[in-house]
Length: 270
Image 1: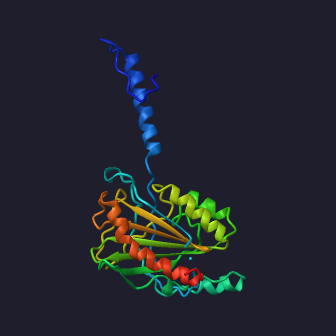
Image 2: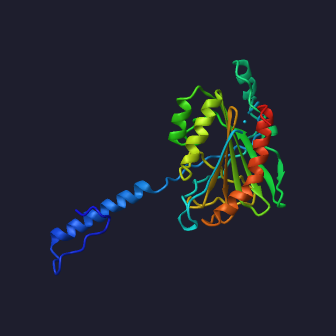
Image 3: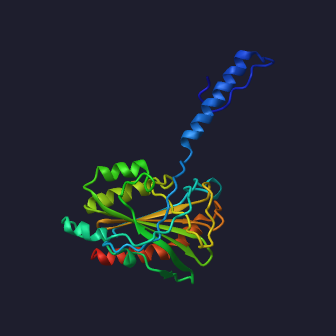
């Protein structure tokens, strides 16, 4: 079998079954390789629209990752329609404090209801909540989950979904670790693999007027670290197009900065 990644061609005039079988096996092998290299799709995540009175925290390290080439964007995570919580969940920040760990920043303070960018863009929060744990299978990928399990511990993960005035969708995920060195390791590792989506996106809630974007929609992600805390920002165009990624990163930046600045202030780093 050739090893130059070119499909073998039949010898002159030869059309015997053995040669055809060789070509078929070669093509199957190539197809399997392409599938293995294809960026994986992420899982659904229901966004619970509840205000949770928790304590949370975050910038020393910063990285923005974009899929290379407008025509070859990695698939965005699949999403599902969220459900609305009937009541606010109890404060997990209080529990963390009782256990000797400094509480996280309160959810409502972490994610502002509205953010205005310098270019005139306005980001509106559609919902926010705190995850049950930092390693929920429907919230993080196996690689990130393994890193968190190997760390000194994670206080909690908080998430929020925003839209801008053009109905582009933006997800924010905030992980508060117990050891700042773990935050540095997480941001460094995730930032190096810009097309490996280890944090799920949330689907738009009913009544938001936003579509649930298909799994192959373009997606950009950016990371910042602030003391104990890692901030993950993700953005998708309203039509899910796989183009103009740098523009999408630039458009997302005011929202990312707003959350990061709040975290930095809470962590005493601003």
